[in-house]
Length: 177
Image (tube, rainbow, N blue to C red; front, side, top):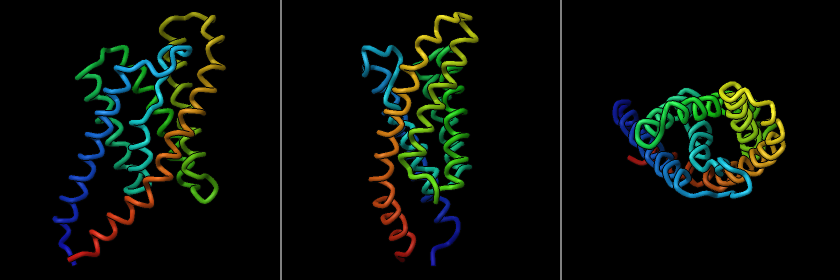
């Protein structure tokens, strides 16, 4: 049986790897306009890592990596406004994903991804309304809802594919001497 410090080191290393991958995907998505008809909308591939960490390690680790990703992304290629939007989207999204995860027998990773994507966009939309005070933004809400659900389905599908494989790899490593 492995010692607890060695398991903690491996867990920390894997979480660091997931954070690095999420940061890279955040940066790539920052550079590429994915949906020209929906300005500002991204697939949210980094969020798939947050959902994956939620499944693999739990809510505390997922929340921590989510917070680190937002802060580091803002410091590296963001601004105060991007911090507000990212934080609002991430908090709304994570809370909903965590609540749904608690009832994972009723929600698939795709369902959790869809709700996470939807609430991510709603969180950012509320910040946009607060900052701009433009009621005309309400016309953009249906696009954000549809895109949040579509992008959330993509991230949830990625987790559905990756989770069993990663869980198998991690459990094989834990059992290996």
